[in-house]
Image (cartoon, rainbow, N blue to C red; front, side):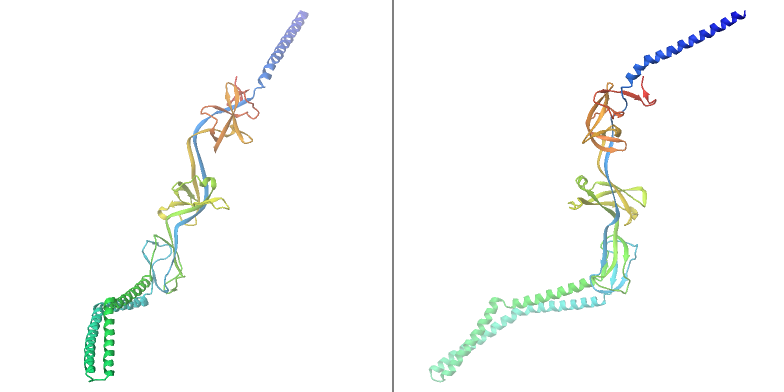
Length: 421
């Protein structure tokens, strides 16, 4: 009985050992059969792909600069004088034409009164000359004619007496001389009538009137210059003098700034310069208001590049409602050069560059095909393609470094990161 039991145990052990050896042989055999298959699959590169998409691409330039006033003037006096009154202080808003400064005007008013009197006197004299000059010349002609008639009568009578030997030859010669003198005086008077010599007197009187009028205009202008108005709407940023100060034409009195609009002056390079236009919108931010965007525009484009730097200056005008933008603030301008809402885009990692050429690999029918492309702008993680690709094509974005044109590839399962079965 004991021997039978030992035999059964031995047989059982041998059976278990045989079964285990059979299973081991099956596993080894299966692995040997799969190995060639695995080696063959391992020769096909794994790749990831992304579609060629369409989206917005924008080309922008950014420049920084200081906020400056649209216009700034320093007020001077045109004439020398004592400051009588200053109507504004720093920070005051002023309107164009508003009186800012008044100088002492007593001497100027006296000079105006004197000039007015001189003008009235010159006008009176002109009136008198016009009324009497021609009459005087006419009277002189009549008087000369009378003297000539008398001298002629005396000469005729002297000739008769001389012929009768009643007078000497000397008396006849004297009568003849008086006649010649009277004749010359009469001819001169007639010549004055013909030449209207009184007009010279009138012209002289008229010139004196004009001179007096010019003197009056000058004194009135000097009087007006003692009142200094604001040349523009703006704000007073600096006051240099106080009432009682003697000022000259070189003495600064006030500084005004027009802050209705402010501006930024920035420089752009040559390739940007040719793409800008007057009136083009510009987005401006300032450090003082980081969350606010101010809408500006290009107001001035310098017509020529600076030869040394090859840059051009542009002025950006910025409306300033409420005068919250102050000169000296630091600003940043964003200028849009180009916008294409239907740009062809691919992931940036799809681009391979060799020398001066760019290309991508496309996945089609399980193979990778190389295609040369033309790059545009880079937007975040995507690149604009201006030529070489069509919307919807699949570009390889990973595993393409050692690919060759027409090489078979396998698409990687992105969720599991293993070959798709």
